[in-house]
Length: 125
Ligand SMILES: [Zn+2]
Ligand SMILES: [Zn+2]
Image 1 (spheres, rainbow, N blue to C red):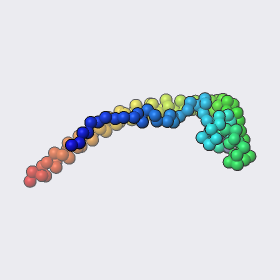
Image 2 (cartoon, helix red, strand yellow; image 1 turned 30 degrees about the vertical axis):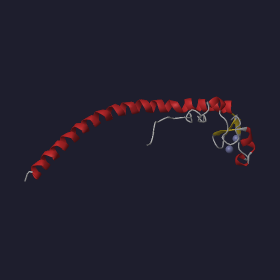
Image 3 (tube, helix red, strand yellow; image 1 turned 180 degrees about the vertical axis):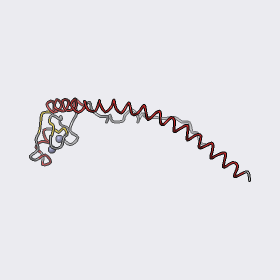
């Protein structure tokens, strides 16, 4: 005589630790839980003040994160220009490709029906 009434007690699900990604403005160092205030030019990654003094970054060059972000933004804009041109080109090519792909699909279907019908004539023997 088992009385299996699905009675759930305890809300373990809601007690889960909030380990989502922190917003970029208050990003903390995964190693030292310090604010990422510097940007290592050699590693090309944000680091904290403790990181800067660690062995890993001996003789590395650092920038304040704001400055680095500004530089990155400028670089991004510069590198974006040719990219936008490429994107334009790519879109043009894609249109052509879509047309070709559509054509090929029709051809493939045609070939498939041809093969199927010829197979059918084979198996009918
Ligand atoms: Zn650190
Ligand atoms: Zn470094």
